[in-house]
Length: 365
Image 1 (spheres, rainbow, N blue to C red):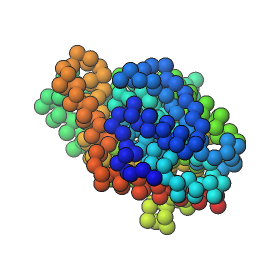
Image 2 (image 1 turned 60 degrees about the horizontal axis):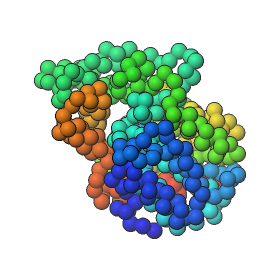
Image 3 (image 1 turned 30 degrees about the vertical axis):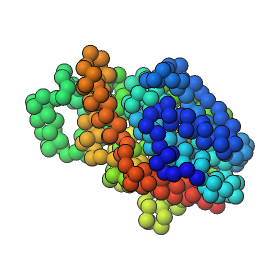
Image 4 (image 1 turned 45 degrees about the vertical axis):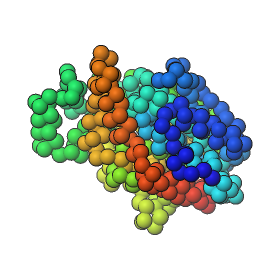
C-alpha cells in the first residue's frame, strides 16, 4: 500500500503515469482510448482502463474519475490508492467481483484544468437522444450575459445584479438554473452539447465491451465541488426508480450513518440534471441489474465554485487575457475542485474506500 499523499498527483500527466504504473504493478492489463488532441504539456490524452478480475465476471464494479476534468485530481487519487491496496483487492477477489477502473473520462478537461470537454460540453449533461427536442432552460438564457460579463473580474454593477438575483430568488434557485444543464448557449456554463462528445462515445464503447456480460453492475463515479468540505455525499446515479434507490441505500447507506441522497426528492446538494452519464448504462447494458452513485466530495462553498466556473468560461472566451489573470483563474479553478491538504486527502480515501467495500458486499450478496 502507498501513502495517501503519494496517491494524488498535481497534474493530469503525472496522474496518468501514476495510474498506469499502479495498474502495471498490480499485474493488470491496460487498455487506452487515445483522445484526438494533446494535453496542456503536449502529453497524450486518454481514457485508460484497468480491469482487476475476470473479463466475463457476472459481478462488476466500475470506479471512474474525471467526468468533470478539474475534479480528476481527487478521483485519480482514489483509483491509484486502490490499485496499491492489497486488502481491498483481496476483498473484491474473494467476493467474485471484478473491478474496472476508468481513469479520466474527460482527459482533456483534466489536463487543462477545466470542468468541460474540449467541445466546451459538460459531459454529465451530454447523454441525450439528440434526434429529439433538447431540454429547455429559458431561465439560464435570461442570465447568460450576466454570468459572462464583458470584463473579468466582474464590475460592481454585475456583482450587485447577481447578488440581487440570489437575494430575491435564493441560492438553490440560482444553482439550479445555472447547473441543471442548458442547450442554447455553446459558450455558456453547463452546456450539454448538440451531439455526443468524444468522451460520450468512448464511455458507451467501454460499457459495451467491458460490462456487456455483467448480470449485476455497480458504479462509483468520483466527483468534487458540492457540499461540506471533506464530506463525501453519496448521490444516486440511476433513473428515478424507487427499487434502485432502495438497493443503493442498502449498499451504501450504512444503516443511516452514510445516507444515499437523490436529486429526484430534493435530498441532494445537486440540482435535478438533464443528460446524465448514467443514461448510457441502461442503454449499453440492458442485461444488468444496475446500482450507481456519484461520490461527491465537498471543497469550498457553492458560491465560490460557481464563481470559479464563471471565470473559467470567461477566460475561454478571452484568449487575449493577461498571463497573470490566466494563472489566477486557473488556480481558482483548481482550488474550487481540489483541497490540497493532507486532512482532505485522508478524508477522501477513507470515505471512498468504505464505499468501495460496501459496493462489493452489495454486489456479492
